[in-house]
Length: 112
Image (cartoon, rainbow, N blue to C red; front, side):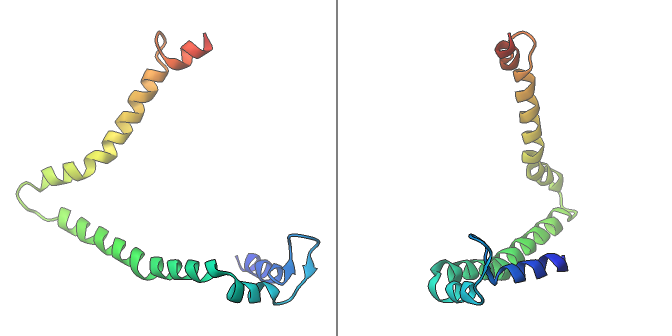
């Protein structure tokens, strides 16, 4: 990983779109001064790292703790919560069964 980072740093001082001409700090000057998308992408990255990931992780942990409580009727809530994960697999299975049906399946119809 360190080798790849070093290669990326070295390549940042060259114009790699043409004949690998050495251009020094021009890429960094253009990035900080002329590229408006750099600051937007930097803000989006900071927002994602500082807010989105911790809040999503905290919500997942709180939901896991909540679903692990010994409360009357909790098995129903666990089932409802897990049902979409199971149903998507069943839907994909049913779709493939229909596609590969020997008599009326779309794949066999196309091959016939």
